[in-house]
Image (cartoon, rainbow, N blue to C red; front, side):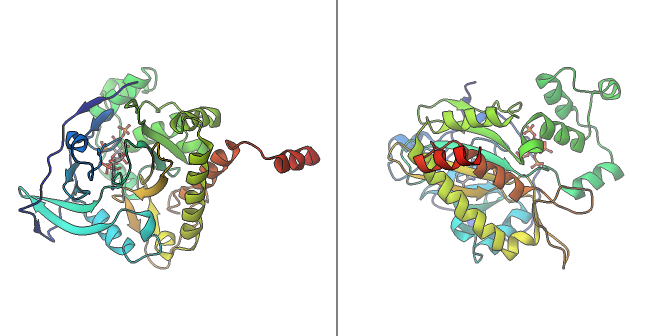
Amino acid sequence: MSCTFCTWPWFEGEGLSVRAENRTKSWTKLKSMVHWSPLAFTLKSRSSWVQLAGHAGNFQAKEGGRLLKRYCECEQQCLNKLMTDSLRPYVPGYYGVVQKDEQDYNLMDDLLVGFDSPSIMDCKMGSRTYLEEELMKAREHPRLRKDMYEKMVSVDPGAPTEEERAQQGVLKPRYMQWRETLSSTATLGFRIEGIKKADGTCNTNFKKTKQREQVMKALDDFVDGNVQILKLYLKRLEELHSVLEKSHFFKTHEVVGSSLLFVHDASGKASVWMIDFGKMVPLPSPMMLDHRTPWVEGNREDGYLWGMDNLIDILSSMLPQTPCDVDRNSEEA
Ligand SMILES: O=P(O)(O)O[C@H]1[C@H](O)[C@@H](OP(=O)(O)O)[C@H](OP(=O)(O)O)[C@@H](OP(=O)(O)O)[C@H]1O
Ligand SMILES: Nc1ncnc2c1ncn2[C@@H]1O[C@H](COP(=O)(O)OP(=O)(O)O)[C@@H](O)[C@H]1O
């Protein structure tokens, strides 16, 4: 599927003021919408910034290789803490809260800077995509979501129950769970949200990409079969994996809806970063997560590392086998 390239973000160098006021996020999410900076064609130092997933209108590209993301207190607090954590090299640099037209934003690095016509992939990590607190809220104050009902019907007209059909609405956790089981979130602990390739093609139609083989096919297409790029991604993921395993910050946070952003270009450069910390919530002390134990309500587990184990395993299996591997495998058989 090709995407609509729309809403060119403006650039700004002046007039931003720092604010500490808290705002919550409440705006519409539009999928299949890509925001692309046209100035990138004329100004080499800037990236051709692209928004692959997430809420429309959430970002604005700024001069100097930075992005404004609509303010979210949870994200601000996480980014602040991450700036002094061992995870710092794996997240965008963060520069505080700025205000523009009475709206607060978190100011962060544009990770596409330094890449030339990059290929980009957003993988949403974890086996659960809604917070436990959202589940409780939906129980206490059930709110039927017509927009989610419509999104559901557009993918699978047979998905809503009779009751949901009569109400023309679904509860948010029900929609999120349905999305999890439809995609690879429930079976592999991650799902591809979107891919934009260097040739300009863009696909955000991965809602039904569920089986390991389907995921492999999408990943292979993303790297155009380039083994060197695959190796670089794998190396970076293995490093991140080992830092996550040791990070106290990671152990003490429920991580939901966070993505890994993969970026590479034709020069052979490739890297991966963690993005989207809007639902990275601190746990009550002394609670800790291993991010692998299957979720049951109350244990707050999110399956992030389980997903990463699977992603690393899939990428490894896509590498051509060396003669040593072939010998080892035939001995095992
Ligand atoms: O991907 P589709 O099927 O469109 O569903 C979206 C994503 O799950 C969003 O998560 P993310 O932002 O991580 O992509 C989520 O935003 P939240 O992060 O707010 O849960 C949206 O909830 P609403 O914003 O409530 O519509 C939900 O409608
Ligand atoms: N720091 C960044 N650098 C470059 N691109 C980014 C960065 N953060 C987000 N993006 C782009 O924006 C998209 C949505 O980001 P995300 O933080 O998940 O938004 P939301 O909170 O609205 O879900 C990502 O898929 C990616 O394409």
